[in-house]
Each structure stands twice: as C-alpha cells, then as structure tokens.
Amino acid sequence: MTEETKTPNPGHVSQEAKDHFGTAKDEFKKGLDAMFPPEVKEHRQSAQREVLKGLRSLIDAALEKFDEEEE
Image (tube, rainbow, N blue to C red; front, side, top):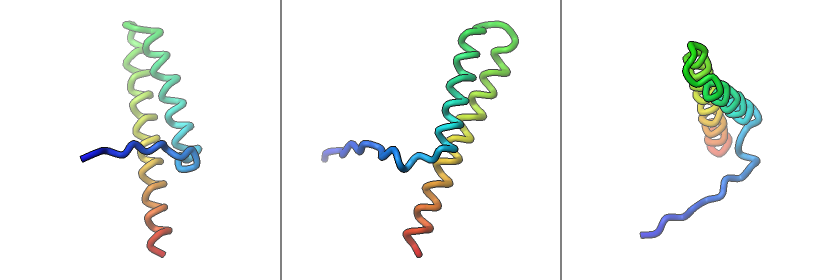
C-alpha cells in the first residue's frame, strides 16, 4: 500500500488562517526570546490561542467547501 503525498494548493488556505498562524509564530518567538521570565506564559498562551484560531479557520473553510460541493 502506498501513500500519496499531496502538495497543498496555496489557494485553499484562507488569509485569515495565514494571519493567525503568522501571529502564532510571532508570539512563539517572543516566548523563546523571553525564555524564563513570567512573560513566557502569556506569550505561550497567545501563541496557542492563535494556532487554535488558525485551525478553526481551516476547518471553517473546509466545511464551506463541502457545503458548496453539496449544492
């Protein structure tokens, strides 16, 4: 059994999802830069929140695509 590797089509990722992942990356970097001070927890939580928002955007886009195909 072989697995097919699909290259993601850049048109399938919404700008909203890209924005969330970009913000998550920035927050993650801030957390690494701060390393151990109390601000790390805040940045980590912000990064996690942005990743979840990005995932939600991807799921919403996929659901919309399914709805369009059903019509």
